[in-house]
Structure formats: structure tokens, C-alpha cells
Length: 485
Ligand SMILES: Nc1ncnc2c1ncn2[C@@H]1O[C@H](COP(=O)(O)OP(=O)(O)OP(=O)(O)O)[C@@H](O)[C@H]1O
Ligand SMILES: [Mg+2]
Image (tube, rainbow, N blue to C red; front, side, top):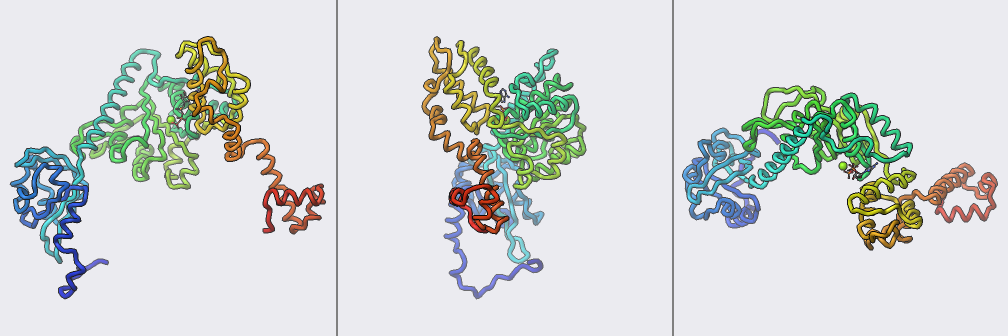
């Protein structure tokens, strides 16, 4: 593996090597712009993607010196740098203007010196257009700054918090929900990191807002960011901040940890953050300090962190989506929002609340849902949880006449009504296995199998122990496809 590079075998048949034409075709078919030069800096490779990017014809570029073709704004060409320093320069930002077409180009570039034996014979750069990434990053940073200044304006007025919701907006009396809420209330006053998990639409973000609004940080910033929505290479700068010139023309900018200091930072979908970035986050939490990207200085922060995961955390750890050591740091308190199917006793309260909300919005006077629709809502499994319930009600209410007082199945548009047809409900119940019948079946299957095993699959003996007739037991063996194991 290591040691002297292999010598080129001179007597190798020519056909095993790509000839110049084949190489040129291959390089031309690649989407990335490619440029190469000899050790003096004279350009000898220039592909069509580069022609498109720099708006130049290769005829006018080939055999010319890089410094004659480009103006690198006082900096050294990365090709020449890789040659003089005899090392690859990877993922480097570079800006330049082409001398002939005057095109201003920003790229992310990986450059490697090309060697024959030990001797450098030139260098090649593979470039990615940076302008698209930059546009996106600017939009995100600007949006974030706007959000932050808006929230600062609001918090300047006493009593108004930057988080819109409070605990009173979380409707429900179900014991599972009450338990979560009780813990949330207890933790609102301290600053320990919290992890909220739960399925989609169960109210995780609502709970995070509630915690912020209930604690002493309520007058301070509340910033929530969805880690899954931000490109990986931007997230680090966005969270920890950047200093001028750190990379890709970065400017001095505090990250969200600093912006939310004394307040709350919510990292939504934390399980989609890359593992290397999770390690950096771990350090920030441990040190209670951030180092902006490209900076040497550490800045103390006092930001409460609320992380949100749409996966059960231990499952996310098992699946390699969440570092175990980070989990213990972000989940001093771990709160779980129960799915709606486990708190269907809250359905009447939620219906009242949501109908009231949409009565105001749509200027209606709806009272409730018909008993028939209510029993269908109770049978449904609600994979989208409260958000889905809200969607169903809003759709039904928007088609009500001004004199209608109760939402019925007929008021629901066909795509939604379909969810509550007898066939779909049965299928769902079977799939979700939560109907009473299927639960009893599961229990019965387990008991029958255990007793059969205990009696070495002797049907008569097992039937006697179970207090069943032999035929009844045989019927159950067939029903549950039980086999001797
Ligand atoms: N207990 C509740 N009472 C009233 N409204 C609720 C409740 N739970 C959730 N909602 C409403 O349901 C919608 C979804 O809530 P939220 O955005 O907090 O869910 P989430 O768990 O963060 O979902 P996702 O994982 O998809 O982001 C919101 O409109 C929210 O106001
Ligand atoms: Mg959410």
C-alpha cells in the first residue's frame, strides 16, 4: 500500500489504457467543470461544463497560462498552489473573473497535483458552482436575521413572548398527556436540556413553545430551526456562527446559539443532523460555549436547548441516527407526546376546541359532529395525529352551509371521506392491530401456544389444561397457524 509508487510498465499493451480521445470524451460528459494545467501553469484540460460555467471557448483557453486567462483578485490560482505546495487542496472556495469573457465565477474547488513517479507534471481542479449554494445560504441567513429582529422587537414590549403558544393551547385530559404536561411544567423553570419525541402532528413544537412561555426565559428569544431542512454544510455556520473569511466568503455573524442566549433554541428533527455535527453540538453543550466557524475564540452561551425527535430516541440511537453520548446530554428530561390513537378519550375536547377555532376563522356557528361521524373518528387510527384531525375538521367545515350545525360524513371531501369508509377502517385496524378483537386474538394466541409447548404439543392434554374441547383447540391451532416448534 505505502512506499514507492508503482512504475508504469512500458511493455503493457496499449489497448488496456484509455487513449486521449476516450479520456477527453469522458471528461466532457461530466457535469462538474474541470480544468488542468502542466507544471508551468499552461492549461491542457478544459471540459465543456467549464465552457458553460465560464462562458469561454476551450480553443481560447487551451495552451494559455492560467494567470493570463483568469484574474484571481490578488490571490494565487489553486492549480499553481497545489503544484507549488505539492498537496491536494480540497473543497476550497475560490472567486475569480475570466479575462476574455469578464465572467465573475464563485466555485467550490478540489485541486490535486498530478505526479508521474515522484515528479509533479501538473494539476487538475474539479469545480462545483457555488452561486446556487450561496443564494440558498443567504436566503436562510437573512430569514433567520429577520425572524430574530422581529422577535426582539416583540420581546421589547413587556408581557409579549416570542413563542406564540402556551400550555393552555395544549388541549387534552388524557393521563398520558397529563403526565407529559406535568413534567413539562416542572422543567419550565430550569434550564436543563429537554428532548421531546413523538409522532408527526402530536404537538411537539407546541409543547416546546409552551415550555419556553411558562419559564423565566419567556421574555427572551425563542428560536426554532428544523435541522432536516438546512443543507448540512450551512447548518454548522447557522448554529455556531461564522467569522469573516472562515470559508466560502463567510462574514462575521453570530449563530443561533448566540442569538438565542438567555432564551430557548429548539433543534427540530435532531435525528437528521449528521453524526460529525452531532459531535460538535455535544462539545458546545458540555462547554456551554460556542466557537464560531473559523474562530479561535470561545464565546460563553446561556441558551436553553430543546431538541425534538420524530423517532423514539432509543430507536434512533439503535439505527445510528443519534449519538448515544449526545442523547444523554440533550435529554436530561425526555418528554414523549402520545399519539392521538392512544388518547382518543380526548377526542370530544379536541373537537370542541378545533370547531371553535374554525368557527371564528370561517365565521360559522358549528356545534359538533354527527354521532355517526364521531364513531367513525373514534375508529380511525390517526397516523397524522392532531394535525390530521384539524385538517379533517377544517375541510368539513369549509363545505358547510351557514345553517348547518353539525359536521357529517357527507360534508367531508371525497379524498378525506375515503379514510372513514368501512373498508379503510377495517384495513387500518388490522394493520395497526389496536382493535379490541385483534388484541384479544393476540393474547389468546400467546396463551394457546404457551400451553401447547408446555404439553409438548399434545393436543388432548393442552385442551384439558385450557378447559377447551379438543376440537376447539384444533380450531384455534388452525386459526393462528400454530406449528410445533
Ligand atoms: N394537544 C393539542 N391541542 C391543540 N392543538 C394541538 C395539540 N397538539 C397539536 N396541536 C396542533 O396540531 C398541529 C401540529 O402540532 P405541532 O406542529 O406541534 O406537531 P409536531 O409534533 O411538531 O409535528 P411534526 O413532527 O410533523 O413537526 C398544530 O397546528 C398544533 O397547534
Ligand atoms: Mg414539528
